[in-house]
Length: 209
Image (cartoon, rainbow, N blue to C red):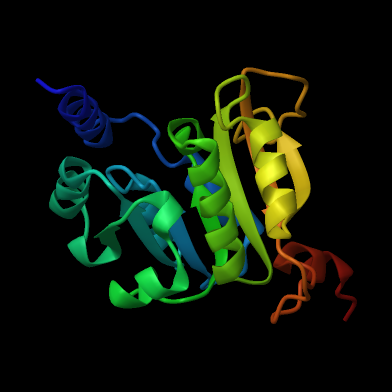
């Protein structure tokens, strides 16, 4: 069996078991406004897209692997996914695929940056910057010391006009201290269209009848 088929088969088995494949989606959900548009670059079998959809977001996923997308279509909703490489997610290519042209958040998890050349990584960041809404977020999850790690991402972000917002050692918001895994949040310039006011619990605590 080809290595890609082995990986896809493994992920399918994990998806139908009790293994938690939604931790990155919960992380993203914590950051973005309700009903946000999210694009998952390198979505694999689509677990994050499904989890974000369940939380009320307009999420889509792209991936170059036809076997992975077939599993996504079998397990979830095929209309959420398209075949496209992460570095090719430009406004024109998204329009051709019938996807939205702008997003409050772009997710690039699953160590996707490690599979991109430096040129491809730069293209992925450049295209992401062009489709993010003002103050939109790019969230990445990758091995620290592999190709496409935080240093390479920071260089690509700087060249694309995205600023490093924060960095953690995992999806549970542990402080980053040169751990083997790295979660980074990059922010586009501008002011968000929706206000970032207090959450419901803050309002309840502050209410004085």
